[in-house]
Amino acid sequence: MKKHNFSAGPSILAPEVIDNTAKAVKDLNGIGLSIMEISHRGKDFQAVIDETVALFKELLNIPQGYHVLFLGGGASMQFCMVPYNLLALKAAYLETGSWAKKAIKEAKLFGSVDVVGSSADNNFNYIPRGYMIPEDADYFHITTNNTIFGTQIKEDIDSPIPLVADMSSDIFSRPVDVSKYGIIYGGAQKNLGPAGVTFVIVREDLLGKVSRQIPTMLDYRTHIEQGSMFNPPPCLPIYVCLETLRWIKNLGGLEKMQQRNEEKAQILYDEIERNNLFEGTAEELSRSLMNVCFVMNPDYKDLEKDFLEFATERNMIGVKGHRSVGGFRASIYNAMPIDSVKALVDAMQEFEKKHA
Ligand SMILES: *Cc1c(COP(=O)(O)O)cnc(C)c1O
Image (cartoon, rainbow, N blue to C red; front, side):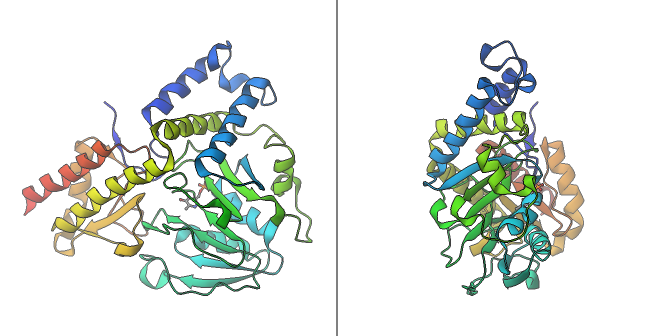
């Protein structure tokens, strides 16, 4: 029986995506070869990557002047690749959690870093407001969804300097005004595909402005010139992303995704608020539609392990919170069906009856 998969990442994929990928692993489009055994330069794989790029552009409404790249190394490699390519003297960063901190650490290898706002004072349970973006910095870096702490920047902010966004865990969860960003990047394994591929949406005119030498593989221009084919890209993970994008398009695109995501998150946040056994950790205005973090009400603190077991018995996995927050985290990415969210809510209600 299929489990209710609340894992933070690698995470749930739509059943159709898994079925169609299984077919392509055996025989891609009836060509008599597996997606895993064909040349990345042949016409069959070229068609896969072309359609994937085209769907990125269509679903996100990406304007002219941007390129969509598929690379290895994860979002973690982008933490250094972004400053390598863009940081001449100074960059500005918003510190909203563990991933932002890791990005800041890498940027410091390349120049000075101005942390313009931080929510470290309250264990990253909110998105800072009222900060100033310095106009003399080379770019401003944000993490739109803080996977570990369950907070999210849900609008496209205005920045006087190029805006760089780590959207690893909320890409394709809502419509985005890409024209407000210089670079958007992320690992695929949260809301798009399996581990192994990283997407980068980059505005070409930002490149070539730093004077340092950039190693070939870390230079965005290499991958733009080669259409992500400098060496074989992660072909199978790209194929899975393509199936996810087809699935999103069939469901009605990103407005529809947003609506579904809002509905799912509301059900869960409402229950956390209502249920006396639990409480949410993120400030209401900042809370994420993707990762819902909550803990036991302190009066019932010793029931934490019991609840995890209770959820596991009900065929749920991945509900344990990250060690830096504790408690619980339900990741309810695009592919999470509303029925799984309802199953979790039912479990919370049953558990309450048992212990109230
Ligand atoms: C998971 C995650 C990362 C790290 O991505 P990798 O692809 O594992 O390197 C970075 N940023 C955010 C917001 C994440 O959720």
